[in-house]
Length: 252
Ligand code: SF4
Image 1 (cartoon, protein in one colour):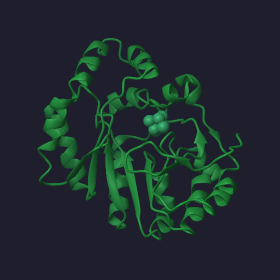
Image 2: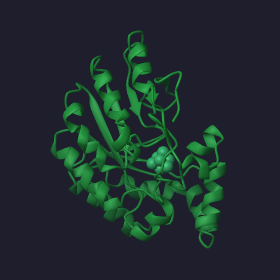
Image 3: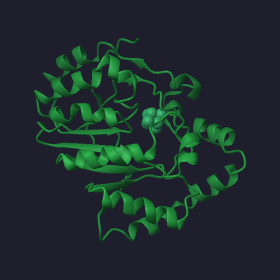
Image 4: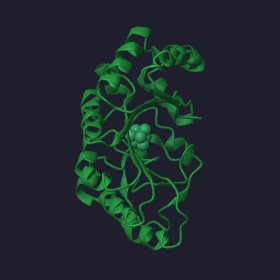
């Protein structure tokens, strides 16, 4: 368990004014996660998360003085990873922010977000993003070691959209060896699910990420790096669906 000094942090991410992360670390253990590299923590340590046990109290005090802005929930963790069932920190954060009705943007891979649909719907401005990076279950098991299966995530996105919540698929980092048919299949599944937007991202080759790819994909390593550097080719294939759904680049 940890005690935090601040809850809302100024965001450097596109489209967000603040970030809030109720856990330090993330048990989904995605090998492409660049957070460990950014905070200089080894991947093997980051995958054992700790709750920031006082975060709701700290947030309550901070909100009295903060200027209204968009809050990104779980930019460096997954706010609905299994620990949330026990600690309910994200639930507490939502109830607290709702008193000020700041716009929120939640990103997760977990169906546990459905628990909070009632609160999320009370916000004047709320978005939920569900991350899916491939539908190949064999790849996903190595790429996102302990995360829920891609089809379960798609089902979560579908349920959120059906509730009238603005829902996007965070399609990233797209597995770099995905072929044209797999890209078409993924986007068609996303559109079919009734979501509002697809946000695309590529793999970020940070130190811990490169180390993990060498370890988990030793045979494909070189090709993964090559295709990552060639991402524009993949982007063009995705952008051809722009007449059917809003497609946004995560870095713009
Ligand atoms: S869910 Fe997000 S924060 Fe958690 S390990 Fe995966 S990429 Fe990192």
